[in-house]
Length: 175
Ligand code: 3AM
Image (cartoon, rainbow, N blue to C red; front, side, top):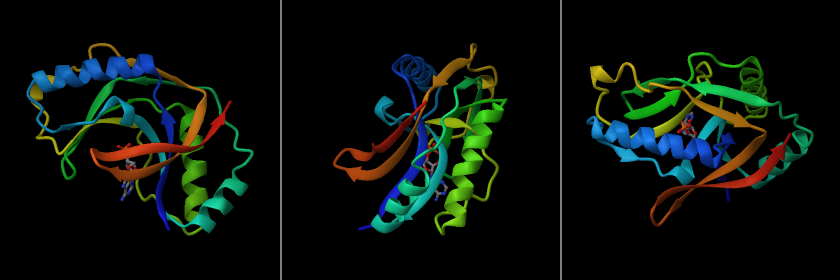
């Protein structure tokens, strides 16, 4: 059976706490939508779409020696994408190593018949889905960047559990 897979950076507990604080600040400021639970916070590098067992085995063999750089990112700006109603915390500046890693994984997917990514990589962590438009007075939120450091990349599977979508790590590459 095929699985819905994506590559992501996990979010460390300290960053999760800062993101939860920001989420409640945004909710109090009037953002209505589904709050993403902290266990689902992640930074997507490449979405692979529906992947069969044999495609997954081939992917894991190809990427067995994936090099994970030290990744350090300042999350300092809010994004709002109207169609899915996503409110996300993003980065004004994409570190070169992070952009290269995302491109490598997206190109690998494309070259092997998996989901093609058609838009430029914009690192972000989704905080709300199905949200109403951002209020103008949130232009200066967050007041302080949330610093994210990562030493690992994860291959994640998205499954529909009883309480909604759940993400589980299938494989982790450590620096
Ligand atoms: O919350 P984010 O955006 O980080 O990016 C989407 C999502 O994470 C991406 O996969 C992640 C886990 O669901 N994604 C989902 N559907 C997608 C699609 N059809 C998609 N990316 C591109 N096209």
